Amino acid sequence: MTFDNFRPPFRKMLIANRGEIAIRIIRACHELGIKTVAIHSTADAEALHVKLASESICIGPPAPTESYLNQSAIVSAAVVTGADAVHPGYGFLSESASFAEMCNQCGLVFVGPTVQNIRMMGNKSLARQVAEENGVPVIPGSDKAGTDAGEALAQAKTLGFPVLIKASAGGGGRGMKIVEREEEFVRSFESAKREVLAAFGDPNVYVEKYIQQPRHIEVQIVGDRFGNVLHLGERDCSIQRRYQKLIEESPAVNIPEEVKTAILDCAVRLASAIGYASVGTIEFLLDSKTLDFYFIEMNTRLQVEHPVTEMVTRVDVVKEQIWVAAGYEVSFAQEDVKIIGHAIEARINAENPLTQMPSPGQISGYHPPGGFGVRVDSALYDRYTVTPYYDSLIAKLIVYGNTRDEAIRKLLVALDEFIIEGISTNMDLHRFVLNTESFTSGKVHTKLFDELIEDYKNEVAE
Image (cartoon, rainbow, N blue to C red; front, side, top):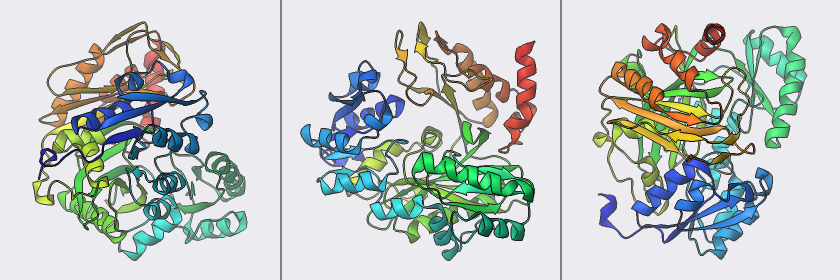
């Protein structure tokens, strides 16, 4: 089965997002013959996604709560423009069960999983329970989330320090606290509660054993309404700064094939158990020393790093997501999935690489790199103004090579060719990481960047 065998799966789709991911979805829709509606705040009136969509509509002022998070305004825009589906992209409302429910109630197809799946897997303590019930290993920790510091401390003592405090709802490292000693626990617990309440409106947190120097491995899942659940291999997302991913790659290196197979099998088993019918990602921590792995969460949406999977599998993940949302079967079988070569993605942010402070401003010069196996997902153009209102991600630079070494060399060349003038970016930081022996040898883990940052600061100072 191919995407060419049927009429367009939808007539018109509203993209409830902005920036590079909105453009990525718009392109996929147009290739499938679907008309598109771009939404935008007043600050994004000149944004590239607005210019590329079939039509656009302003939904509010710059503040996200008054525009890209305004559920009623977005659904009203979809109804007014005659859209029959809504794609949330990632971030913003992509994992909002209430938004998905509102879309469904208004006769709009939400391009994502069911409301039940979003609620189940969005609650980390419930997701953990589901994983355990299906034989998927989880990190030792709390049986349920809560707000009582005394109960949580008792659990932490049982686990043994250090422990990790995590939010039950949300993600992105919000509310995550590493606690080394018992006397620090209550203060950190209360701080985590306040942080997640402000971020997600839910103060519940839970405690789990802290694994030192783990690798962050995730599996791309695709499911449909006919019970088919397939994986598209694994990604390594271990290069992180303050729980925010910097560099992602596929496939993961220096992991025995039997361990990879076990991780992939667990991911498919978990997604199958909940009847998952969309694109999603199941994330694991892999202990670098013991090679034991543990389920940590499922993201019921498209991921920022999906391009590396597309490069090594030749599967258009976005089209597949739209396809199954329209009620069709996944367009390929598991035996069709072949992981060939190696892909690496570098997230380019508008920020000071030393402080991570955002760097908004007008682009005074722009030249994206090119060449065989080089891909740039971005919403930038010359004289475009990067606003201070939204996430600092401005581009994703993805490369493909026959080997990991070739991909690293290609990414370094592409970074040298990439010109973004007028604002600060973290491209020099990427060059530094890619040139370290730890990265080139594949000895990566989630704390590697913390170990390298002082060397980077010294290099910049020189």
